[in-house]
Image 1 (cartoon, rainbow, N blue to C red):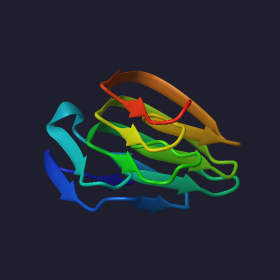
Image 2: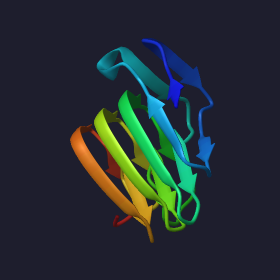
Image 3: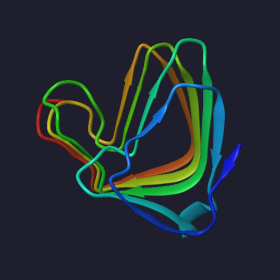
Amino acid sequence: RVVFQPGVYSGDCNLAISKNVVLQGAGADTVMECDNARHFHVAGRDITVEIKGFSFTNGEADSFGEGGGCGLIEGGATVKIANASFVKCVSKGKGGALSVLGSSLSLEHVDFYANSAESDG
């Protein structure tokens, strides 16, 4: 379990997750603000990831293929996102805020605001 204290975490994010993990924030008071980068990329067969209590803002996926502006989940992972929001996440291809490819995603108390995809995703 990785616990994040309330605050704004900014910069070039793109957290790569390939092992079982729980990322725990403090709700709206824990803000992940990325500059022209995706917030997280989960990839791994038979891994379980929980992401709880974050506000993800200003994520961007710059590829023109598949890929969410705030998160990409692929490779057979099982992911649960709870008590979170995704705001102003942009994908230059398909995907909008989140893109899920060959994986399982469950959402609980998750809000989406002002996200976009520049392609037909």
